[in-house]
Image (cartoon, rainbow, N blue to C red; front, side, top):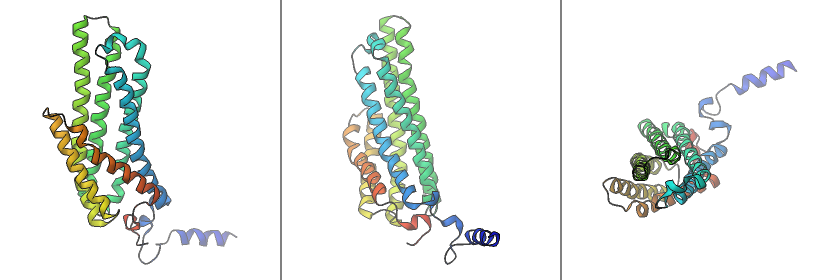
Length: 246
């Protein structure tokens, strides 16, 4: 009995297949599970920010939203928390993508990880600026000053968002180029992503310089992230993403 256990343990520690090391086994023990986790994060990030932003905007979109903040504080807070959870999700995407991308292009892997961290930090900073409107509304300061500070908080969130998305768009161009070259996903998806992120990046830069076309230009890139999320949930990456050929 003991010899069987020792033999089994010894066998599991050996390289797998023809020169394949333990390191090249599917990450997290399952290629499908890992792919689905990344796909779920793409979809959850999209949902978290979308719902959170809709809730926040339902409060801050009013002309004098600080005057009615006490009645809508809970909605604003819930929306802000969802947007903060999105920051966690986007950083997690960079972390989970890193070991897959590193096998095929370490600089791209590092750039994408760094971009996701920058995105998460700036998005979170913008949300914190929005949350500052809650104590601001409770201070009872001059109405004109309160309105100006509230407007500044909204503009800070908008600018932080555009900087975050500019960082993401730039790094994602290299990501999609690598995905196209390695065929870790179908090439039509990689091309869609490259074009979508190029348009997305253009929109973010336009917003920063005061040309308000970013919402429309974000559609192709946003649809790509949804498509990629569903693709990974259903099909996953190609086995070569994990150092496997089948």
